[in-house]
Length: 90
Image (cartoon, rainbow, N blue to C red; front, side):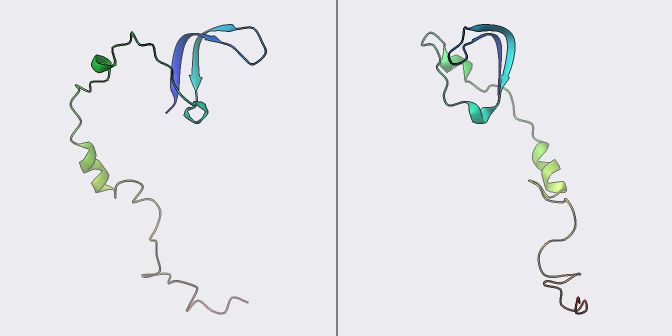
């Protein structure tokens, strides 16, 4: 999960702190978050927005989750499996 931060004080190892207006951090480099106890997580983490209903229909039309890209896959159908019926190849 990538993170965008504003008004940041970054301290590189063995150097003086640097103040930045904004910074983006790639999710794979983040080990953990330290949040203050005064942060009201119960109210901030409530998902009160309705979920879009047409997304599932759009995915099913094109195969969903990566389907529908490129040609046929697998052994059957046109083209065959391991080169049978296409000549000897040498």
